Length: 297
Image 1 (cartoon, rainbow, N blue to C red):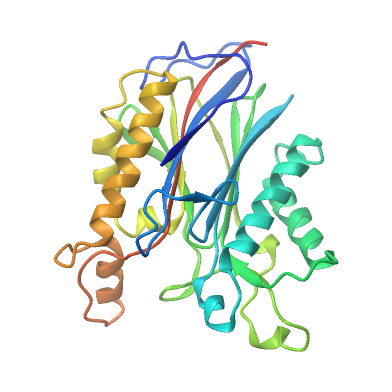
Image 2: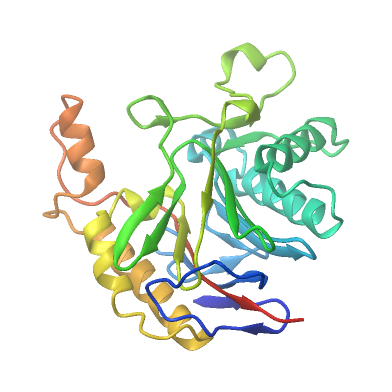
């Protein structure tokens, strides 16, 4: 199951591969999403923008387009906690803050911080943990501002090559940085990082740049080369092409996740850490695929 997300009257006049950005036109993102939950929940989109324990959002304000992904930590299920509640609530809060204009485009960490502390102060009981990645396109400056906490992340592709990407944050193998809310009295026993620990970056984009934002379910099962091969099929900057490519990437990652003979990036990473592992990594998969296009109001 896929869903297409688009906001405003966006004219996608860019040629895939990038154009000169020495102009005063506003830019915007044309974004499509696709995701799959693991454990035979293939294609099920639940609770708004959640695929399994993953969650995502796409929002816009007059100054910027903002999107994000979060991966709920599945281990909470052993304690009777639905991991998707934390990631879903975090992303919904980020989306609301953007729509209300309570953010600064150049400070995506601020979006994450304000959202997280709202969750901490929430009167409704909420437990759990998740990674988070926030991507902001400043419409006028043509600059991409990002914040990534954990092992979700993004790629910026131009001319068929990765020109910018996020850095993965791990405490140790298969233990990413994460935001958490622990039961009262158990705070010291639950791994929890500050949103200020998120890796931040800023990058100038061009018309036609492709931005792929995803949870680790994608990156653990597909190499950059494999992703780039799929993106080469994206010849047009229209909605249909973007959604078709997002679906193709997510489906391939889902299929590889259940291939026992495939030497996945996750399996290779495990071997590098002294573990004898082979095959894909069954996991929830969320893909947001965006193209930088000219925006007209």
